[in-house]
Length: 402
Ligand code: AMP
Image (cartoon, rainbow, N blue to C red; front, top):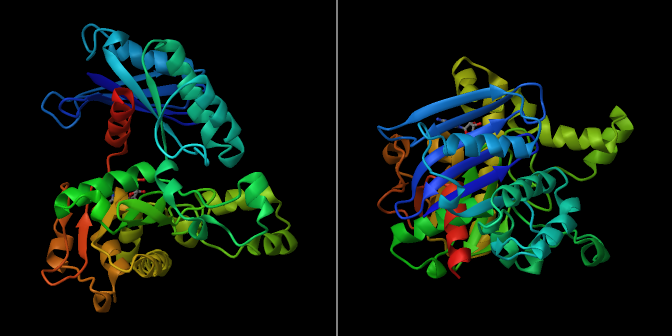
């Protein structure tokens, strides 16, 4: 059985075809610059194997439907492709950013589900319409294939009200659903499951802090397998310092910027989402560039690293207090998996709380899930590669077989 996983953005479609028996990736690709003069499809068949083949198609891709059709054409190509026709696809899993309070788990897509997604557009005006575009196109191209929506927010729907409410007039929650939702749920749940396996414990018996540090960053406190708090809020801006997103700021900043810089709300929103975080502090948002700049004596780059890792440490401390007992801290995503300096700085000074890093294990390079804590560390520390596409495919499989 082969499953297709689709992550549809406003001008892009990321996809994978996964063979579910072996969980091998048969094809992975990205359609970019949809709606622009020149679009691009980059596809790799059998990535990471001796049979790896890459293909690029450059042409105008006016909309999501033509982008998806281009992908299907390549996947089913008689010479190059990996499937005979669309009937070989057993199910399609769609990443959906915001499920609001309507979805506590993944859902088979029905007209009612689409209606609920439309209702949630005000909560994610940039992401949900793009996700819906992908869903509508896939339903048109594959009318008889089951389609499943997997939500970034669903894992965090277990948060209790004292963790998800903002201390603002309660009517704003009652009438407008203003609250914290959290994101990256698919990734947090995936690495939590992998960590439970490594700890040889059922997930329902695990207390974990999962730290997703990529372009977007978030941290989750997991109590007996369920999310009880997470750092991203109503939108994916709250919490940790990210590549271009600020994380926590004083909400009165908006008024200050309006009065003192003449900015309107849209400009401030763009500033906090696209011009802040590491980029705002030092002009670079890729951690690899930041390390190179630090090595050349760039003090602002060092400051950006310090601000990010200090915020990480502060949240880890807060979540240790939330959980009481912590079995493991798990680092994942681009920075979390690859950057031993960020990991070490984020855990600095936590030895008193039973968090002891093994510096040698921490700096060893590997693509595998691994334990990097010292023998005597009360809290285990892991690096576990996230795999959101596989997680979405597994979710889709569970929904389809239920
Ligand atoms: P993600 O959003 O998970 O794809 O992570 C992307 C980010 O991970 C990039 O912007 C980099 O900042 C960071 N990253 C990727 N590889 C490395 C590496 N080897 N060392 C440090 N940071 C990395």
